[in-house]
Image 1: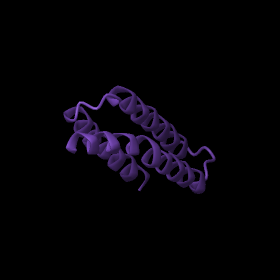
Image 2: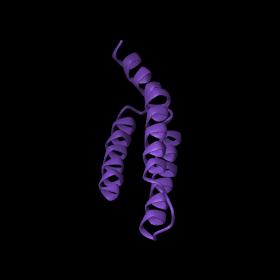
Image 3: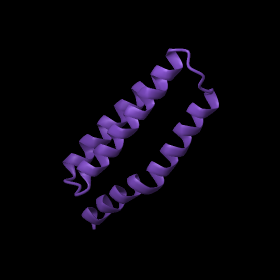
Length: 88
């Protein structure tokens, strides 16, 4: 299941990055670097989990929830505002 979450996250980020690039979003490269850092973090958690290191399921879920909530409420909100200005 953990791999499925990571796979979907990568798919979502790829689609979002295509949209941002098509919009010529000025914060594209910064936004993409945030995605890259998160993917690395999730892969590290996955490796720790798979190697048998002590990692709590709640820690994984908390990391996902906190990061995604913050990302959507802050980073994604920025490009949504940019897109809306383009429609005006």
